[in-house]
Structures are given as structure tokens and as C-alpha cells.
Length: 322
Image (tube, rainbow, N blue to C red; front, top):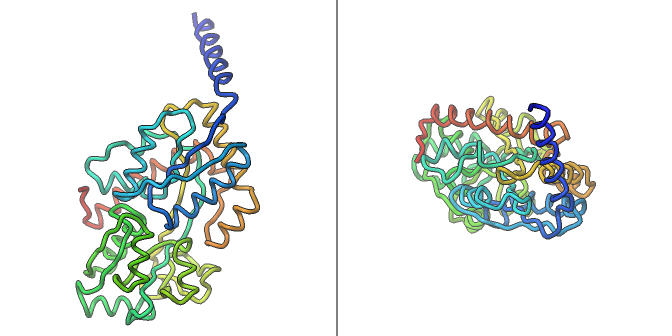
């Protein structure tokens, strides 16, 4: 009887493999759960372009922003598990359970993780005419002017918001939190001088920093980054030990057939070897994941661990799920 079941399972797997052997036969969509122009969007478009070379089909990005990335994530969680709708999300995928009491999906069980993609440091930037010229100057200004600084974020649960929450908890200060439906709209208001600061990734802020339209106060990395060599780290500027980088990963809906997951994983790893992607990621100080972490096993374990990490961090910061 055991031999019969083993043969049956082998036959079923072989049959499924044959059905999906031609994948992909049409365009693949990667959902980025934020509006165009933000860091995750920029990185996602670079990844899509490189993956299309390996898959032999167009890979497009569809922006589905709002609610800190949860609207786009919910869309993919409910999508047909055939490999044609994927999710490119950042660490907000892990922090969502600590911030939202009633998520329309479970990040831990409603996806088939494909693999890690990149890790990017956060940068605190201010409008060009903000009184402070450094992180310490910012801290002093906030303490002297409680609830007068407008701190922008891309929505509750977005990485910009997570950085803000951790900064506020560490410093024990008070400011006005201004939420948007994505990094793009938040940066537009920062450039216009409507808000004072935002904590975001170089992918969306670097061009504006170099143009002199906004100014970098500090980077939340262990060491200074190559794209902003004169900008000190948080640890060097008044917040010892403060580090925060943003990881990004690729997901398919749960129950996506293993042959399809395997094919997407192969395409992801080949994309991460693409010289064009490596160059573009490097320009944004974004690391490139190695095969050791760009795979379903590692990504699944990492996600579960990070979900628990953010639950503890938000609890310690006094943040309750809304």
C-alpha cells in the first residue's frame, strides 16, 4: 500500500510538472504595493526587466499602493496561484501583523516565498531649508520645538513609517506624523517644503540629494555608504547603535505549484547575476542577494523570524495594532 501511494504521488508530481513545463506562456505581473516613484517601485522595475530576459516573456510592474503595502499584498494573496501574479515587497511584509489588527491576509501562510532580493540602508533627509544641518541638529531642534516638526511617511506600516517609529521610540521625542499613500507623494511634498523630513531609501532620495533639492542628515547603516560618502551614520551623529536597513523579497500566492516556484526561483537568481541589475542596484547602495538566500527555504524562515522581531519591537515602542 505504501508503495502504491508513493507511485501515485510520483505520478501526480510528474503530471503537474508536465502541465507547467511551458511556464511562462504569457506576461508575468509583479505587484509593487506602493505608488510609482518610491524605492521599492524603482528596485522592482529593475528586477522585472532582468527577470524578463530569463523567462522569455514580458514581466511588468503593477503599482497597487495604500495602507502601508497591505492593499497590494492582499491582491496577490487572493490571486490565482499560477505564477503569473507575483509580489515584490519590503520588510513591511513582516511588520504588518504588529501594526494591523485585522489584516485581510496572513503574511506567514498566504504566500509562497520565492527568495530574498536586496537589502538597502535608510537615509534621514530634510527639506533643503530645514534649520538643522545634521542629525544632532535635528534632534536638538525637535526637542526645542515639540510637535512642530512634520515627519512624513509613506503610510502606516511602510518602511518610512517603521524608521520614524523606531526613531521616536529611541529619542523619546514628539513630532507630527504625516502619512501619505506612498513614498512618491511624500517626497513631492518634501521637495515643495510642505513637510520637514522623511526617512527613506537612497533609491528614491539620492537624485534629489545630489540635485540639492533636499539634504541628507544621516544614514542608518553600520558604516557610511558609497553613494553618500560625506553623510555620517546615525551612530556617528547622536544615536549610537541605531541601524535600520530595508530587505526586499519576491513572493507568489500560496499553493503555487512547485514546478512554477522552481522556475521563478531560477529566473530570480539569474536576474541577480545580470550585470545591468548589479550596476543599477549598486548605484542605489542596494545589496544583491546571493543564491544562499534567494530561495524559498531561506525566505520562508527569514519572514517568520522577522514577523516575530517586529511584534517585539512594536510592543517595546508602545505601538498597538490598529
